Picture 1: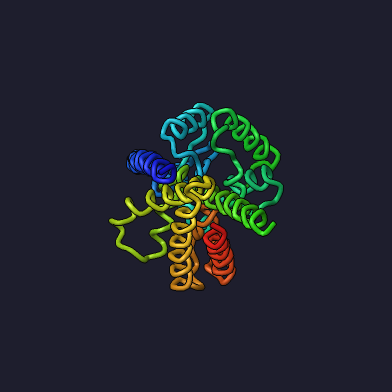
Picture 2 (picture 1 turned 90 degrees about the vertical axis):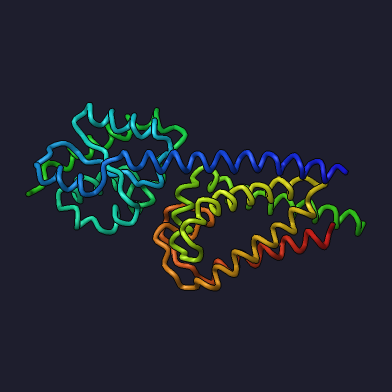
Length: 153
Length: 137
């Protein structure tokens, strides 16, 4: 009897969780459509944008629209831009996005993560402390970029 | 003494397997959209099924974890766990050698991986643990 009652209770909770996940997936899909993408990134590079371009792995960063918008607006205040890209193309097709992006992006992540592969560097930023860590992340990247110096065009 | 050993084995296997299923399931619960994209790369089911399949697998794994943890439901948790492992092993065997750009969806998400015999080995170990639980119940 206990087993059946527990199973009924956990199945009910499982159903509620299922519905919650489905809603979050639908919200996430809508939120992603609002983010700038790779073609807009290329337009920024072509227009001679002088700030830093922060690439965000679409899938790894927090799936909260509010957190991503917060990051985008903070970066914008400092003269940078946030772009969301598909994980494989962000790290494997960098050449398609231009030399400028390669130099500005990779050294920041390598410096932050002491030489770990880039995709592991992206994974290491803890999502639940996202809001408090994001300034650290931005300032750290700016510091690394200043240390690297201007690259040749 | 034998009975005590069986009870201890039942608890040890149950809690250990529950932790594995919990870790795997909660990763998918926290990042369901990422998991959905991973499932898409397996190319096993129509894309329209993924919006149902991804949350179902996530919730199913958490359910298995809870049922394995509770002694009253451990038997059913092990049965469901065996079913999950059989499904995962079938998928891994069908897609042996396949490069998955977003990972296999096992624990880490978004780390490119290739399906290898190591995945089969781990799933076999988990299946053995479930069978051990069933034997000890």
